[in-house]
Image (cartoon, rainbow, N blue to C red):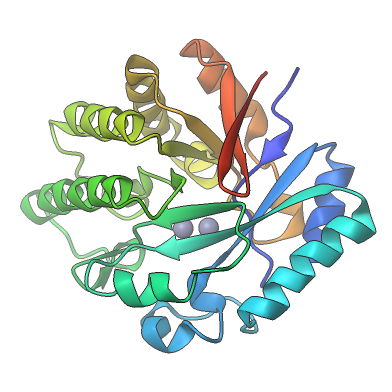
Length: 258
Ligand SMILES: [Zn+2]
Ligand SMILES: [Zn+2]
């Protein structure tokens, strides 16, 4: 079998329908849609600083669009959300999510103490290394928060911070160990895999060592990017002797071997 699921994808730049159609054309068996919480009307005022990636949706409109896409494409589409983890805002963010029929919730750290780290390049060795360490503190807090099924792109810091700390492998191992302990998956992210594969390889190695559940997601924002790195991801996982991927339905984990 091959990797035939994608559990991180966005709809705001196209639509749930077009993403599901592309997934079907790619031969995927299950598609997990996971729009950003900051793209939701109700939550946007709290997260205005994140910017927008397309027209805002209400939670109900989004949920309906995902259901309709599944029906029209006759595809197994799961309802997810990519949720920002920001310590001082978590309670307010989470209050919007209660009582909704999520299949999976992705926890994401995009912001570190007020800084959107993917857009900030003014770093040197000292501040860069310190930011990596703070990043892993926040990722571990996201793992242990109990809010999420999976933590996304746990090496995304590399996108704008080349100052890898000497202790990176130890940080990854600690994260992987805590994820296993809390039954939370770590994501092998398509964008990361295509952009800095050597760092993703270190993440995968830590997950293999600690038997951490793995989620695979492209992070596609347009239909053409669905499953964008699945071939490279499959190689990375096989080389680390990982052959199981975790997915979810109604927040209950399922696993398949590939
Ligand atoms: Zn993200
Ligand atoms: Zn994303």
